[in-house]
Length: 620
Image (cartoon, rainbow, N blue to C red):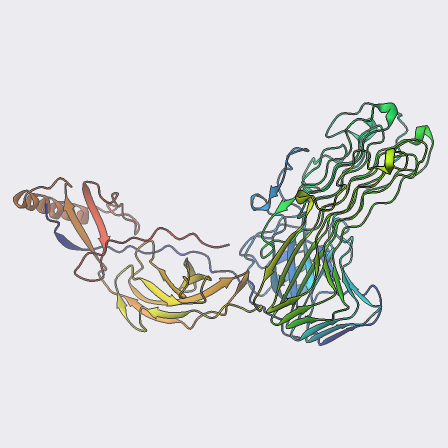
């Protein structure tokens, strides 16, 4: 049958949604801290404090352990270090995709005020942060940075609640003739502890300390309630400790997997219960940052003699985050390496720490001697009479570098396994990797060959300024190609759209807009940063928003029968007007398109508008 349109008046409106929180709009900072000139070793510029209560998305309050060193108007980085929620079982195979957990999530924010135990932000948080396990780091904003030769700018080490991050912004160049370092500032290695039990035959992934299990290295699940602390199974990117008798500690994981610790001693059967290497982590370095995993401790009892003849696991690399106009200095080094474990004598050695995370994003060029996020080596064993287990090597780290010209050799390989002096050929006695080229242990390098910049500001095309529209107008504009455009209606999030290769974007509301004056704004997100908001665009949704009633049975009915269906539709309309709640609270029930029944379609003209965009999912 031929479809007939009947105009109805229905007031379908959008429910209010939270205002869009402030994303990264800080570019190269405001330069409020002036010039930084580093003239000595071990200079640190980042104060940090633990978050002591959860911070909700959309909230502005950060409850912290200590506000010393923080000031209103300054920039901070909020970082989720530990994953919230339960830990997976030890020995869960990798790699681990961080999209399933909140660890590594971060954002920049500006402080509005500082009070005892409380930091208040100028704008709402985009994401939620849990406690314990998150920290707040002060991020200085310089006009220019210079590190002299024989000098270093370093990250304070992670202490289990805060630290491990070196972060700053610079409006001009960073001239580095020395060292920018977060070596060993990440997750901590498992501590060696002498065991008097003379225990042999340990077999458990989670072997209690008093039953012969050595301490695991720290990783992203170390803060989970009831997380196991000893035994040869890896937990996330934290390596397993060696099991009795004298198994070696595993290497921590990050971009690459950590290596395995060496076998138990000959009298215990040279069993394969050395600590397993920490898992490789998969995540976008634009949206996450993570410490390198700690190496596991070696197991030992020194044949019943008291003493520290075994060694602890080594710490992983910390985080370096730099944004600047350029990074200069072909003699300068930027480094977030995992540390190497110490050598053992008559007990087992610990594993190396994994490489950390480095982000360098500049507008112009990146030039340096080296950019390193390498794993540390496993500890050797020096006993020449009988073999004792060496430690596994730490996995490579994660590096993101962005600039118009990139001239900075990068090293993201793993550390090597330790060796046992008494093993034939001074081999690794079951520890790994023995070859730095093993692909599963390599770190991850991401290069962006364009200058760092905020996306261009979106421009509205339609509706025109002051235009009267129907209830679901097509909202069209232009933005930087490939960016995600966030659309605000009356300062409330409406939806998002992708700008295509030509820069055009279109968003159709998923429900009818309320009658009356409206105002649009748009912001563009690209490569983890956000544009300034667009100019406002005012328009009006006309009164008595028209929708068309298509009446049909979907079966090719003749015209006289169609008249019957039209009469029935008018009758139903009259009944619906006499009954309150037939279309309740601004909601309509739409039959599935293409099936028999009553179909409601919005129209902005006498012709039916049959396209309905799918619902848009809010960001953040």
